[in-house]
Structure formats: structure tokens, C-alpha cells
Length: 111
Image 1 (cartoon, rainbow, N blue to C red):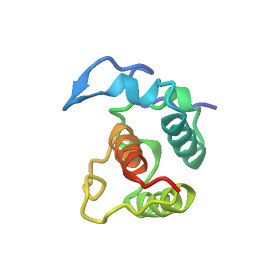
Image 2 (cartoon, helix red, strand yellow):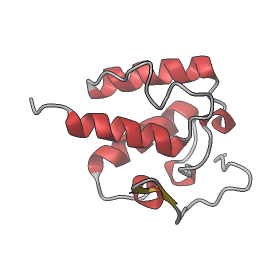
Image 3 (tube, rainbow, N blue to C red):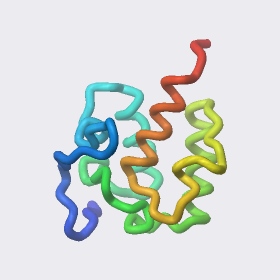
């Protein structure tokens, strides 16, 4: 059974800051697609149902689970996610998580 957060469409067309959130979730960028797939696998939902504005808590990710997911993301992608960044709050959304991991990947020096 696929999960869809109540009241959230599967596609968003709004702006937050300088990033179009619909481009975060529906992209040809393989890195972002891999991040979204990883998160979907972690929470057991279809990646197409992850809306950027959905709080991770609505996906069943508690604050402790979020810490564990962050550790797994760090390990999977070879990045370090700071404790005091945008993922440290209580209202972390799927879009924030994807955007932050993608920005860290983009800033990562080439191997």
C-alpha cells in the first residue's frame, strides 16, 4: 500500500525560497532521484507519492528515526550533514531533506 500524506497533492507547483519544489521531486537529475528513492525506501512508500511539503513526521519518521535516516544518508552518499543545519528543526519536510542532501552532494569535491 502506498502512502500519500493527507491533503497533499503528489505534485507541487509552488515556490519556496529560490528553489522550485516541484523540480526537487520530479527531476532528471540522477542524484536527486537517488536521494528521493532512498528516502522512499527508508519509509516504505512509493517515491512518486513523496510531496516536497510533506513533514517527515507524517511519513512516520520520528525525530530519532530522522537522525538514523540522516546517518544512513551520510553513509550512502559519503557526505557529512551538520547537526545545526536545516534538518535540526522539528518541522523538517521531505523537500528540505532532499534539497539539503542534494546541495551537500553538489558541494562535495570530485573523487
